[in-house]
Image (cartoon, rainbow, N blue to C red):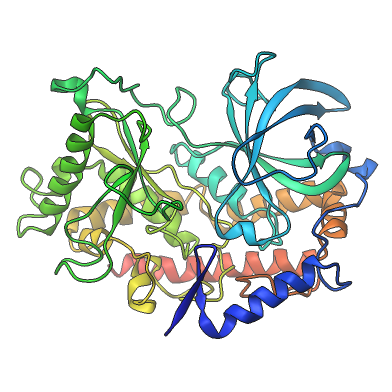
Amino acid sequence: MLTLRVSELRIPAKFTLWLLAFILFTACGSDDGVREEPVTALEPSLAKLPRIEINTLSRVEIPDEPKIDASIRVIEDDAISYEGKIAIEIRGSSSQLFPKKGYGFETRDASNIDLDVSLLGFPEEEDWVLHGPYSDKTLIRNVLIYDLAREMNQYASRTKFVALHINEQSNGVYVFMEKLKRDKGRIDINKLKADENEGEDLTGGYILKIDKSDQEGYTDQNSFSSEFGASLDRTGNPINFLFDYPKVSDITSQQRTYISTYIGDFEAALASDDFADPVRGYAAYVDIDSFVDFFICNELSNNVDGYRISTYMHKDKNEKLKMGPIWDFNIAFGNANYCGGDATDVWAYKFNDRCPDDDLSVPFWWGRLLEDPVFVDRLKGRWSVLRSSILTNTAMLNKVDEYRALLSDSGAVQSNFNTWPTFGIYIWPNAFVGDNYAEEIDYLKNWISDRTIWLDNSINAL
């Protein structure tokens, strides 16, 4: 099917004009749409949520780039817990189409130098994210999967629901989050220095991403390509690995060569006839347990972006490659109406079969891993343990109810949807459009229940 690119968003051509018209229509202040500039005053009932107030110092709009100077005030239990300077910008890719923007910001000192601080009880850092759920009308999908991943003993961004104020106007409910980066309290890997270019010093740490490229595209400076791409027979779309840490501006040529060669050797071993051999095969290069947990998170949620977008992996010094942390699940859990994103009875890793024309494909890794009896046994065993503990339906649905109660009882739901009145309106890529918050929550809970039934049977049948 012919597709057009709208701000890096792949959508069918027949829907492109409709989507653009909808965005313009809602941004112009239709009674049935969404205001471009929120004007609803912060309601007193939101006091139960931490409140973040940002003042852009007379700037009317926050740009995509570069960051602009601003001030921040964090209020908890009616008391100011932090106040200081920040630099802030819009963040996100396809989400930038929405009037409710997401933001990234850095905390800074009086001299405008990056400053590590603890906000809302999180470990000290300087880089933070304000995720603004918009197409996810439950407001909770990212929080749910990150909480579950941490309970699985995998690092995932810490989160907290907040009421966001920008220039004395309410922006509704946001999720305050840690930006993924190398740090003792986040992705805890070795700090790789510019002069560490040989021996064991060269072995880590590294962070790579499979993701959309920025405006420059994929270049030899910011990325390298898989020799296999999306399939074992070296056909299909190429898979590109973006350098995340060290930064493109910091990574040396020796470090580029080392990590790209490591990934190439891993893929060659996985593609070989001896791929399941514990010594000559892929297991010599990767931490299998991290791959299993990454697979479970993406399959539990049927993440339509899983494995191919916002996919992080990291390698520490003298250690094997690990998958994760997980990132960006706002259109998971049945919240996407394309490529089987709403289905409860499909494998997320088989995205390429359902949407072979999409530019961003899933690496061949996952189907190949499921041909290895050892990987399958690990997966079955891990799934069984998790399904008897943190991934029981009761445990997961109780989490959903706890989030719902917090947001509803605090008045956050009412305030958010007064500012952004999206109930009963299709917001890309909704598979379900509820008329109220209760219907959105019920859809999510029913979807999770149906999904786990299918996964129980399908994983056991592997």
